[in-house]
Length: 401
Image (cartoon, helix red, strand yellow):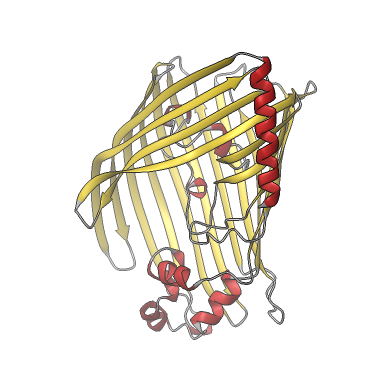
């Protein structure tokens, strides 16, 4: 923490120097989007069918930027998003500070940034910010870029960045953070670090590689995570009732100690992007893969968790109208030395159309089909298979002003 305090003092000095030498400018923008969804889920294992229709989605975003001269800048992004409060059975607006950082550019090719920001992992995460749905081509972000038990895509970090280097538009970002592995682990022990490298071999075609290293510390308090994850999410297979049903014999506490303590987490992303080029096509292709490596002595397990995500988006501009197609494959495998714990895979196919009334107003209509396969494993490697299909349709109106 002393390092971040010293950097904060340096940024304050640079701000005072920039403010004393140049004029300042400020800008506040507002974004909002709303819409509705139809979701039909078919549980082929239990032969059940459920349908939900929701027209209560609404998000309002305030984004403030300030430039103090040519080198020093500030950005803050604050979002109000409605959610259902089960205690009061009513809709409430949940505040969320997505980004708040300062930046100082020493030159066109080198700048320093500190604060809360989206981590430079892949292309989508930084190109389309959370609150401004008007900026992204689809209604929803890819599922692997949404905050979850095992994904942190927005965090506090120090970043060193440079863009537009040479005629190939080479760019880089190096980041260092206090290490918050997931929304359930908030001890900030250890450090998170990583980098992003990208370039354009030809105009508008962007190739990139990103890497992020994190670690769940050895002394991480995990009892609260056990309670939360045991009731919700993927770790629900360790719920005693579910464990008994599928015959998992491994001691729950032992499993958690191996999987959720003293474990290194490495995440990589490869991206290929063609946007705003000289043809009507636009393409975003990303491959994200995470590997968990338990560091406990005596555990013969190179990778306890393997997660792979492939996302493909392609659209074709017809004036203001853009039809598009998307595909996403997700796989999550969890192993333990004595038995396989969990194995799941999803295939998602989507079709949509986007119409831009103006640069600051857009409507999107979208349909997605998901073929899901979840398999907690019982004794002797016998899976308890849960197969589900879902049909999802949505409409979204997004504006900026």
